[in-house]
Length: 404
Image (cartoon, rainbow, N blue to C red; front, side):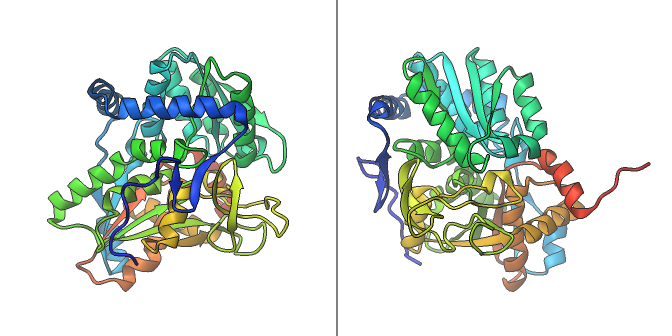
């Protein structure tokens, strides 16, 4: 593992080494440049930062706690485990951090219409929430399969006034939802801002989303120093596109003593089209605006993916994660559906916390690593979202019966 990571990336062209960039139709070049310029102006504008801080505190409910998981720690018999409670944010996940930042940018740019993609529905709910707050029209694209398995969030979005558009193309999951959102954006450039939900896509989205999510790691760093007087030994987070993970990791990149572990979706096992672990058999390619590791066949055709968690069911990974992996600053593992379900139930039964299935992948990795570490070691696991949306699906899979 490299001792220090370069915090000055991406470069001026949006690249993290060979990853990232801006691979989009000519029609989108100008709005992306406009967004980049406005974002960097806002980043250095005290009034914008003050407004963002106000809403994150008063509306979102930040800071979120860093909670010592005492019973889980005792059960595993190894490292001391802390949970970063992003599930306690308003709307139930980390997604609101980025959605709030981007809606304020949209307002600055005079946009009146918001679009977004969503997989697990948490980003869709966060986007619908901030759109309602600021009185903007909101359209959410969601794969038809994800609409079925995340019906609770579909209802929430509709109650918040958003139009939810099921996407029936291809695999009917997150990749296809992104395609539809990009088609919409091309058609409605002047009035519309696309609140992309993860640290993926064409520049400036990966850096912008990372910076809106770094509040997770900034808080966790201060909290662990206050509680333990030192930095953690290990950070663990699930990785779909990668926003909750990069938000946690980024403030620790230059701390060589802190190990970073991202956990992808192992699905039904590492076999073609049975998982969504891009670092397990993926290869370099371009998809939906950026260059990164992608699950594709020998002819460059995007492979189908599978995960029990809709939010991790995506064929590509954020470019900064690809760079951190190749630089050996971060390690990327995976958890299968079965292990994620086991972790979901263990956290619920031991700590009274029902995590999102996405977050349960990170918990699953912690279950493996914590017992092998000394008792004075410290782990922070990012509980990126709560599991209300997944309760019905998990109950069905583990055979829980409704009382008669």
